[in-house]
Length: 117
Length: 113
Image 1 (tube, rainbow over the protein chains, first blue to last red):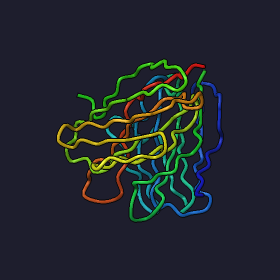
Image 2 (image 1 turned 135 degrees about the vertical axis):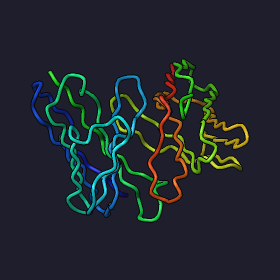
Image 3 (image 1 turned 90 degrees about the vertical axis):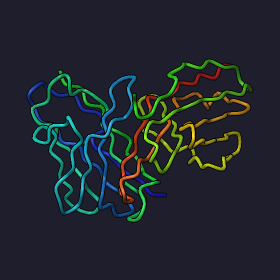
Image 4 (image 1 turned 60 degrees about the vertical axis):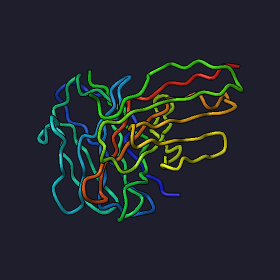
């Protein structure tokens, strides 16, 4: 079946550095990908919608200059956390809809656990 | 009011028990409903979609009541492997198909031997 991969699975970095997370659809194309964030004991919260060939759409309260999204191709979206701070430590998960016509079925990546020291 | 609300649990049940989870959602225009399962420190995985007519998949039965904006999940004959957090998920209507999912915080289930 369809698979979405994320890299890296875990990253520990110092405060002030930037971290790039890759999300790839492995055997299907995704014009749209979603980036979520999950803090401990909290629900997954949508951060932004990544669109191939156009700008990402950010949810209210998410700083677009801090969380840079680039949908470079139909199989790759990247999220860069710039100037990371300890409060950015979280579980970042991407997802891609299974088809162009419906987002009812979404495939999730395995997630990236970010720890900022 | 939160968009999707669930009892966080935990629900601690013995093997073989029947357990039910409930969920309410606030947006009456929501179009699609799901139950996902999330294991500790892993990504969520689709358990089943939820339809107004109710639907069953093996030991799992899901119900939707649009009038009450209420969704339920029933697990019969619980197995140890059912231990996980169950997420109630709603897809709102944005006038198109390219919509994101809205997740509840999840209900934690622990099945004991």
